[in-house]
Length: 196
Image: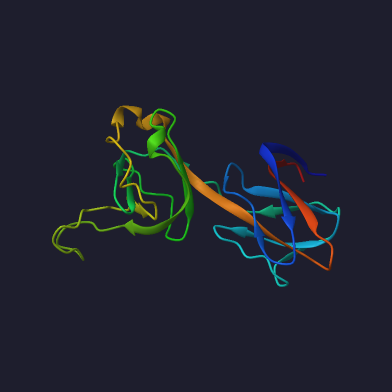
């Protein structure tokens, strides 16, 4: 029999006759435990999930555990402001993130730079000015990403002295829709699983 340990806070989504999404959830585990109460429901998990008649079915009051993929998180080395935001990681460390991921930045010592649940739109993998680059581009070596976050109004500059306290990690949402005519309340909780 498997056992699990809870990670983070429990949340709820009230599933109606159209897709309803949770707020953004910073990923801390590879598994999400879900249970539909009051009525069955169907759910989807992702950056911008749409639950429908073809997504995972939850029977009423029967908990399920969903694999949501590997946790990806790392500190950042630099932050470029603009209508979109560039995040640079340390030399020798490629990014763990890919285009289409949603990410959340926490920076306790520089809270003005933080953002929640923004999409990664590009990964700069250019190696040198002579290989696939145009004038003005920066070599990325897979360690610079672009995020769909308008940081142009953020005051000040990123202070690299606080890099170790930053945390950029994947985030996700849960989408839910009821099955039948009764709304369902879906409880969700990230868990770690041991045993088998």
